[in-house]
Image (tube, rainbow, N blue to C red; front, side, top):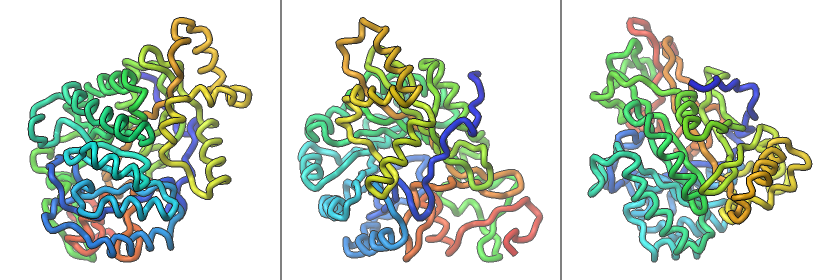
Length: 409
């Protein structure tokens, strides 16, 4: 096991409910794929009228400063007015980011979305999806599909669209994290970000019970309760860091979000590494990401989401910051002493870990404090990963030890 990371050595990202890098948007809850770790129930009638989606964006505009809008679902690429929606988001001055499983992606659609102003794609691909033609494939085998998607976006998006990949990590796929890290390095030219989302599931047989408005509820009614995952042991961010370091020992995160009930929890963990397909030269430190966030907020009025892919590919332009930042100085020295790599351009790539809601032994729910995946819902902002509770039960679930009264009462 690698050394434990102390949260106090990292930059606590300044994101909050009213001022954040990203905001979640769901124009549809209809999907063309089943993903085991999904927090949303597939609704075949789930397409919202564009007018309603725009009204939700008005809620965002009224309540929250944001740099990017994550257009999700459901599957946003099957939303009939996705191009119009992306254009509307871009016209408001936000970065449109489409979170997709990629099944409906075509070269023509990429070109139309580019013309509409899309800033990035985040593709969700993992081995627990029921994906036609890819069932039973390992994470490493799915890299063939990931590469096909990334190359398509790079070619037809003319190198102007950021590309990120999400993978939900389960206990049985934790040991495949190193292969994903290596694959991301091999294709660092057009893979800008790799995100590991740690699987979570509510458990009926756990030591807690749930209530909504004083009424006990059946945890089995929640979409994120999976009977066959009753015995699943939750993975922590440190475990993924340990896996990353088996192939990239220099990995060190620079920024994080803590939990609402646990100040030391790494709910969102961000690391930025510099290198090329052959060699990585190191990671940035807390000061670097602090400078980036503060400078962007001072210049643009929002915290930064999705750095330009052109800058990510030409990261050598950042090297003059070695004069004021020690981590960039170390990266520059490593590059200069590695003469065999002088012919390779310097690239930048983000490795991220997301640790969703933790239900603590006493029933408290530790959410992501300053969560970027907040969703406009009926005139307010709510956690996108728990909106299923509002739709089905009319309120958020409160948990407490079995045999107790409603902990809210």
